[in-house]
Amino acid sequence: MNPLYHQARFLLSTLDFNADVPDQGYEVAFAGRSNAGKSSAINVLTRQKSLARTSKTPGRTQQLVFFEFDSLRRLVDLPGYGYAKVSQHTQAHWRRALERYLKQRRCLKGVFLIMDIRHPLTEFDQRMIEWCDFYELPLHILLTKADKLKYGPAKNRLLEIQKTLSELPHPPSVQLFSALKKIGVEEAHGVLDEWFEIPA
Image (cartoon, rainbow, N blue to C red; front, side, top):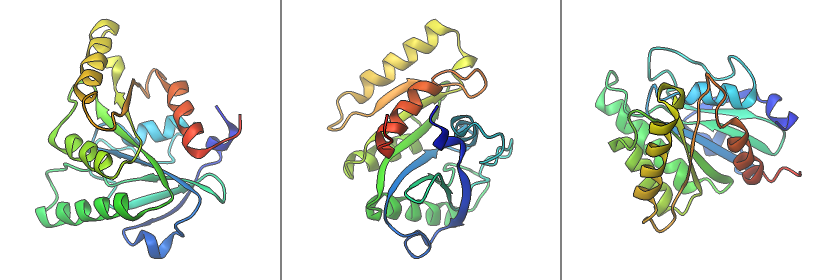
């Protein structure tokens, strides 16, 4: 792991991102349905136990949360979508902020989409995939909680999803991932290294 990732620190939380964070440098956004393991993935990839909040109560991330690695590189934790216990008005507000961010943010280099391997390609996942495809944003999918399945079924699920998404104009890359067992961490870092343009 590049030492840069361990330097991640909280910068700010906002929905007015263009006003609060200059649109320059490199950003990689992490998106996912609530409780898919997004915060755990961020913590493992930065080797910090509590950089991103983890909670058994889904929907804790209610704004865009910016973490800074250095003056040029940031990770953005997007609001967990699909959380049923917030109002439809709030969900619509989050959805508009998400789409505005994906559409307007020029320094956004790509999106990590976090999907629970046991419940992949939900309606909300499909929407994020469609948005990234429409805006021609590089997309990398982490099939989290891969340790919950045996290797054979997990590998089959990976191949199924790759096949399903292969017909898109801009097919995303997909991998197995487990924050608990540290599965796929090196592969995910490889994608981040490329998008952040970190020297080898």
